[in-house]
Length: 171
Image (cartoon, rainbow, N blue to C red; front, side, top):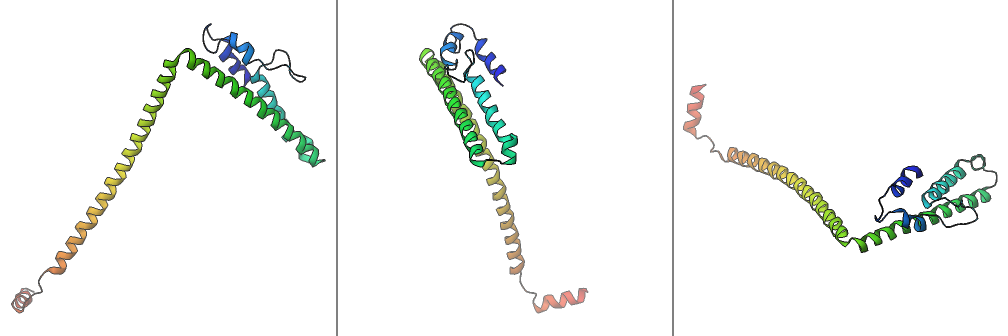
């Protein structure tokens, strides 16, 4: 997981908002007692997720020897993962802020693109509803025509005595 993401940052040309000059200060994990000196936030995020997952599938968790100790360990792993996830989110938000300051026209282009996509989605939704509306209008029209036919058949004049005579002679 970290290898493909790490390549995203290291292969950027100089001057790009994600270049390695900003990467060293923002993407580099802060030194701490459990962190290696050359690890990045992405590496830390990956390892904290692996530690969390390992704590869930460990044999102690399955056997359930000491529930409170297991719960505490899992909670610590979750908290570490969430902390590093927040730091990673902060890194990306800082990069977005840098990009918006350096290239404000890019932000406008992205906004315009998002608005166009939203318009296309809404147009498709309107077309879908229009299709359904036409279908139900046709169903109602068919019902109306059938009703008129039934009314005409009910309004037909009853045969008079002369008509009955003709009918009986015809049979």
